[in-house]
Image 1: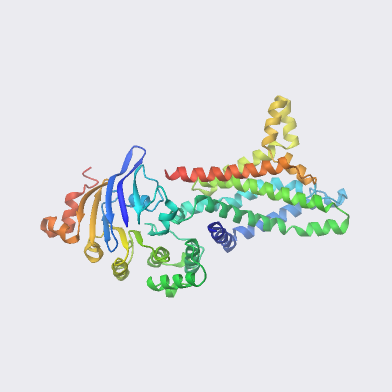
Image 2: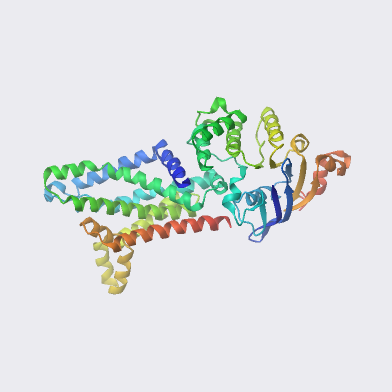
Length: 241
Length: 243
């Protein structure tokens, strides 16, 4: 469902993503791990069509994002890292806007918005203005817009960032549930999420993949059976470089 | 279709904040205020809105149009919602069109609310209403041109203030370029060819003819090409920024 082939991104002289290739099939939940600046968000921005790649391509359900971006984007639900929202709208207004953009109308639109609100537990804030929401609710509103059109592919950039432990748990459960019939790619710094929600994980560092496997395989590779130790082993730190 | 969705969202956003209301009120106060004071509407005794009313519009638009348009892209880039727009199945062109139409609608509302002056001039005399309609069309086209310029500048920067200052400067140059007092001074210093070239950039030639009631194809072509070029430029800059 997501096929990334030799994706590369250069910003001037800096090589942010270096020849990245991986696949995510339906039913897979791929955890995208890596230190800050490794190229995770850049990769996601290329896969969702926001940034054009320097070279390489990504295919969403067989549709190339570089050659046919319009169609490919209809298959994706994307949660950007900063969970951007229009502050002057209400939650329900924003979701209705996103539903219209996704070409939903009439009762299909109404049902999709209601379902997204329920899935993301936004009932209590549905009519509140977005600028009055707490961080957790903002994140969930942005996640709701990614789910509106029931996409086959979900790309979530740090979906549990800044959430409290309860909210983190809920989001992970949601990802696990949705992962059963979708292809999900999500990035995180939190290694326990790998075991909690992923069927596979990939560690990237300086734009390259440095580890790839199921959580069990990665733990087997790790010294002391700890993912943190494996992470520290395969990635470079700011101080070292 | 998606242009319409974006148009509606943008328009609602304009009227959800004080921006639109403040601009409309200020435009009304200034345009009608100038008509009766500096425009000498009553003392001139001329049943036409050409000199007293419409004359002020380009001068007002050079400040007001940037104020309306400066938030169009700058806001998206600052909030991060440009990333949402960039990953929605929406073409850049639809977004540009939707936003431009929303800004133009706000200006249209401001312009439409000046209708009392039309009623006044019809009550006081027998004006050429065709010329008045042409004047309104010309005024709206000047506003749209300045909005398109502002949109282009707004795509270049994240900062609303920089956008405002640069757009105001460009629009001021365009207003001054065709203005007679200015061109007279300019003509003393340079050749007639240079003066003609400079006047061609200015809005006055095209605005004045519409103001007088002349519907010339070249004026519409000038306005349409300017607006189209600016909007296409916006599209190019937005794509280039990400590449």
